[in-house]
Image 1 (cartoon, rainbow, N blue to C red):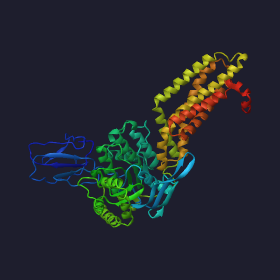
Image 2: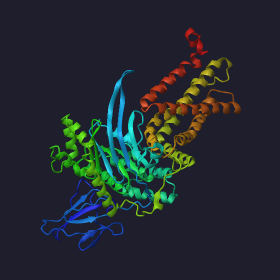
Image 3: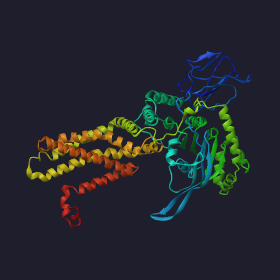
Image 4: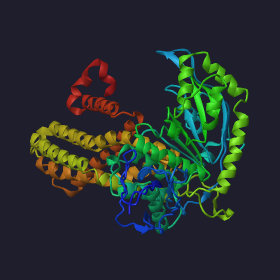
Length: 611
C-alpha cells in the first residue's frame, strides 16, 4: 500500500469498465498493488486505516479518482463517495494544560539614530490587544513591515526592551521562565545541525526533553515521524532535506517536548502548494488536540486560509481585524467591500488598507469598538462544542487527570548531567562527521611542523643561536594557536542560531552546552599539539630529555586550550564568519608585532611601555 498516506480520497463511480486516476497538486500516486478489494472498490488495509463509503451520484459521466493533501484531523465531505483514512494517533504524548494567551495595550518602539545622535523613536506596534485561546489555530497576517514577527516575538517572550503593555497567561501575568516550559518558538529559518540525520536529531531531542525509557522515546520518535511523513528520511542528513521537510522536522522536534503553545514564524514561506497543504493542516490538527498554535503568515491562498480558526490582521502596527475567517467576508461587506468567490478576503483587506490611507483607521476603530467580539465569542462556543463531539485523532485518547502533564518543578526537564551527556554525544557525532575539517587540521599540523623544522633545522644544540630558538618557540605557539582557534571561530557562529532556539525553548542550559562543547574538542586539542611536537622538536635538535619534551608538549596543549576559549569568545561576539575571521587576523597581527622577532621595535620611545 502507499507508504505516504493520503488522508482524504474522493472516488466517483460511473462505470464498471474503466478506472482513471488524476494527480492533484503533484502528490505521489497511490499504489494499489497490495490493497484489498471489497465490492469492486480497492480499500486500504483496515488494520491501519478507517474507511467509510458513500454512494456516488448516478448521473456522473465517468469514474474519477482525486487526491487531496494530508489532512489528518479535518475531514470535509466531498461530492461523491468519501474514503477517510486515519493517521496513527500520538498516544505517547501526554495531555498538557490548556493555555489561553491574552495581551492588552502592547506597544513597541525602537530608537532612531543618526550616527550616535538619537532622533526619536519609531513605533512598530501601537496599542495591540487580543486573546488567543487553546484549541485555536491563529494566523497573524500582514504585509511586510506590519509588525507580525515583532508581535509574536513579544508574546513568546523573546523581546523585552522597549515593550509596553500587559501579557497574561491564563489570566495571570506572564512569567518568562514558567512560560518557556509551556511554549516553543520555531523560527522562519531552519535552525538544525547539518551533519546530523533526522533520526539522530529526533533522538537527541528525546533524550534532552523526555523523561522516559529509551524504548518509549524510540516509539515516540517513530510515531511523530510517521505522522509527519518523515519516516522515509530517517537516515538523511538535515542539510539534504527539502525546505518543506526541514519545516516539518522543526515541528517534529518540538512535538517531542509536547508544548501547550507553539509559535511559528512564517511556516509557509518558501514552500510550494504541496508542502503548504501539508504544514497548515498539520498545525490545524495540533490545535484541535488542545494546543494554542500562533503563526505569522503573509497572504495565504483561499484554501489555506480556511484552515485557520482566527485571524489577527495587522497594518502598520495596528490591528485591523480580530476574528474568525468566516466572519471576515461579512466584516468587509459592512464597509462596502465585496469579496469574490474563491478569493482570499484577507488579501482584499490588506490591499484596500494599503491603497487608501484612510481605510486602515476605519478598520482599527471598528475593531476597538468591539465589532468582532460578539462574533468571536460565538465562534469559540461553537468550536468548543464541535471539538467535544468530534475529538481530533491527534488528541490523546485518555482524558484522566493523571494523564495531564504537570508543570515541572525544575527549570529543565532533565538534570544538568543528563543535558551534558546528550550534548557531548551530539558534539562527538557532529565533529566526527566533519571529516574535511579533521583532515585539514591534520594536514596543516604536519606541514607546519615539517616547514618550521626545516627553517630552524638543528638550531637547538648551538648556543649562539639562542635567538633563533626563541623564534622557533614563538612560531610553535602561534601555529598551535591558529590550528586550535580557526575551526572554533568558523563553526561556532553557525551553531549560534541552533543554540539560541534550543535554549529559548527550554531544552538545556548554557553551562551544560559550553562544558560539552569544550570536552568534545579536548581530544583534538591534545592530539594535534603532540603530533606537531613529535616532528618539529626533534628536527630542531632540542635537548633529548623526556622532562623537557614533556614540558614543551604541555605548554603547546595549554596554549591550544586557551586558543579554543578565545575562538569561542570571538565567535560568540559576531554572528557572521566574515567578522570573526577579520578579528582573528587582527589578533594575529598584534601577536606577531609584539613577538620576540620584532623586539627591536621596543627600543623606540613610543613602545618603551611594552618592556
